[in-house]
Length: 344
Image (cartoon, rainbow, N blue to C red):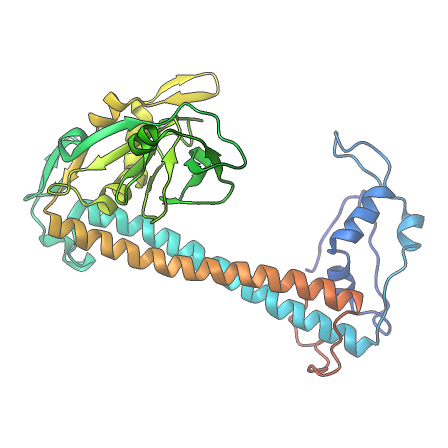
């Protein structure tokens, strides 16, 4: 970056490029043990975020110094993986934006192509325009039941896994950080989740209240008291359609309007939830909408798995290359210092 001006709080150092590849040094300073070393040698208070590191202490830090060609290859390898990470992050952001736009289109115009939207006959309703054949009903008219969960403290171990607020993530059930409860057979049967049930987060912070996830697991689970089980009517509502609609941004905004707010908590009870107006196309259209959004979710999943893999690869390479556990003798040792790609 040309013409950059920095505060005198930031001493500027220039590397001897005949001995040291600047990007190699930059990557080395990103190692967690190096950050810990800098923190340990700093003076000041972490509470005020005003730690200071003396210039003489900085210059006294000992660094690994392989041959310049190896430094450049290490920098090139790490740069390549980092760019792949950035490309994946951009793809994820684009897919999420597409998903939000697709939801707005599908819940307004149905499954017609975007360039045919103007041909759809719409009618104005309490929830906005929807295709003429669709009905708008209370959620309670399209479901069999709503039920509050168990008021029982979970434990690290036990017989029955209990799903809590933190297990509802992105419209799906996460089985990370499970807790367990002991129940009589009658209570287990009363609170046992069935595939196709929806779990609605009725009590949480204002930002998180109203989040919903579709239960689609084979195993036996029960659910906690801050959640409401929604049982869609099989002849009226496709569970995945309901899940997508309840999680749509426009629906979340309306749900927030139903919430009762208290200090640090908001609540939407089952009665208010059942009164929520929803669009109700035919079951066939509901399935088509669900399939379209599921295809986008699958693409998003694959990109997020790729990002996790690249994150792990970068961390592993950073550690092993910088500590000499992995050498680059067999890798390309072309001089990359003048290819115009230095930097992360």
